[in-house]
Amino acid sequence: MAGTASAVGGAMSRNQQQRAQGQYEQQQYEAAQQQAQIDAAAQNAAAQYAAAPAAAAPPAAAAPDDMVAKLQQLAALKDSGVLSQEEFVAAKQKLLS
Image (cartoon, rainbow, N blue to C red; front, side, top):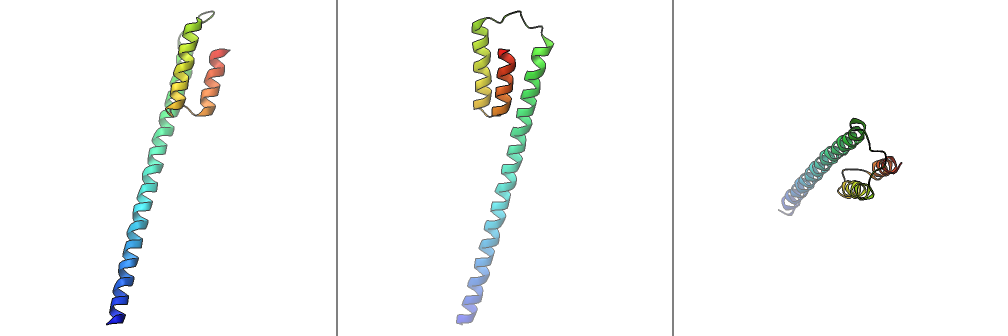
């Protein structure tokens, strides 16, 4: 009887481990998919931002309030994860030049 209980307990333990492994793999897959969506959104936002100034002729000198608003907008995009630190720095340098 003890041998049967041990075999059943071992099978249950293996099933639990397999189930936990499956859940872990599912979570990793979902995290990878979410990161891919975030990366795609960041690339789209960066592309839109890069294309927008080229479409409109920039004024000779931007008003200081307008410059501050644009810098705040860039910071918000970075803080929300839409822009990476590198994209933020590049956009800021372009804005300030």
